[in-house]
Length: 210
Image 1 (spheres, rainbow, N blue to C red):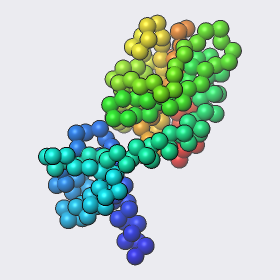
Image 2: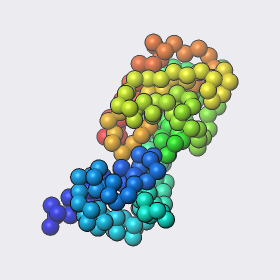
Image 3: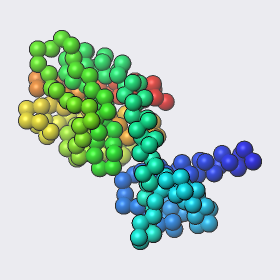
């Protein structure tokens, strides 16, 4: 029984991860094909997950994440912020730029933790809770790079705020998290110097979260 229950839980989690990839929902048949399961097995999973609010069906029968996952997300974000602050603080002080952790929410990036350097005369004010399309800014582009299997850093200039320069790197190797660590400043940032430091901070955070 424990082995069977664990297998069911694993399948349910895999199903939720599939639905979290930003696509426009899937039919039960598509889910069965992608998961390598029979349609009856998928329907049993969907019945349980739907009753708990973790998935929902639209009028065309396509399956989407349900609003029940928002309750879990709200509980995780403060823990994620707390875990990221030491890494971000070290990065901000070393680079002299505002450091941030951005997580993917659908097609947007959400800044869940921000640390400003203590010793600079001027720095970018970046508000926690800020939301931007993933296609704009280094933080979002780094998340999109992660979806393509790349972990190198990304640089941008003036995409979110005129005159602001950003460097960000994906947080690698954490299956449940699509996120990036980045810095933003009005002063020049040398990508060859700052980029590897940002990537190292992202890897450091990944280790802390693993």
